Length: 331
Ligand SMILES: CC(C)(COP(=O)(O)OP(=O)(O)OC[C@H]1O[C@@H](n2cnc3c(N)ncnc32)[C@H](O)[C@@H]1OP(=O)(O)O)[C@@H](O)C(=O)NCCC(=O)NCCS
Image (cartoon, helix red, strand yellow):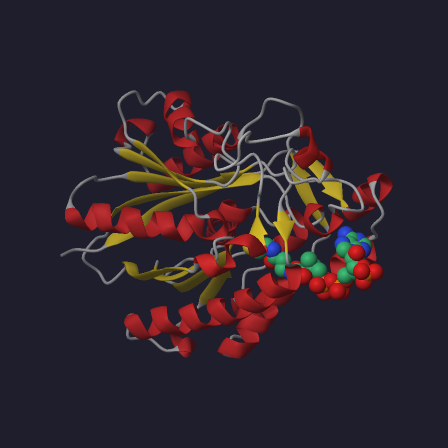
């Protein structure tokens, strides 16, 4: 069976730059605290109300299609990974398909948070190899700035996240050894409430109350230290496993594109894998954590810098769920 491949990658981030010092003006935090613990210096926020994850996805998708030498008309299916859909339902993939002028094209939303792009990649890989669809538009896009709490109570989470979108077009590989070699997905719901959004929740009657809002339960809750530890452990393990599955060794990796949750997490993972820093993509200092968008943004910027040329690329992600995943792609 012939392989699937990433035929083009693109990204888009809003124009509004928010520095750590900007955040320090609206809540008790400092540039030094944020930079030292996470590596983040600035992030992007949507410019005004009404811009959703599907809006950010439009220019990212167009860039990916153009770089693949394709147009919207070539898209057979959309996979949209996000934890911050435009609205609770319908999915952002439906909005994106409409905005790209693709009536009737199926659109699947993937809700696997920071691992969403790699979960989507695995689905697209299987669909292409099975001949179900020919060209799949896979997007990771998030608007976090409207959903975090800019107060002392919410600051540990609020400083970490930014808005942005990345996209990839997945289609058939030429028979030349290039393409998606391995993808591996994991989840463990034992960690579900270490990083989660408790309200509104359909299991509660009512789903949302003024008391819940007073407690801030409509903002993400995170046990930062537990997430940090689990991210380092699982991203390291899944990276080793996908390389082994691909019959490769760490020295064969030209570029490591990890999820960008915290620069220190990625430095620990790279050190454990014995990967030198010049093979590791870091852009968290400019964008913060854009969840499902971090890996495709990293791929898109790497493409523009010529770093994907004939490169064996390792990817790994970890996030809420817990979910984690890895992939090896030869460009
Ligand atoms: C969030 C994170 C940066 C916090 O770092 P940390 O080393 O655990 O935090 P520390 O123990 O050094 O500091 C905690 C202190 O800083 C304070 N603090 C929290 N956020 C702050 C902020 N933005 N500015 C200033 N101080 C802050 C806390 O109130 C706490 O104060 P206290 O000691 O007086 O109670 C870190 O745990 C992390 O990155 N975890 C992983 C998060 C992640 O990756 N999430 C997404 C996964 S996909």
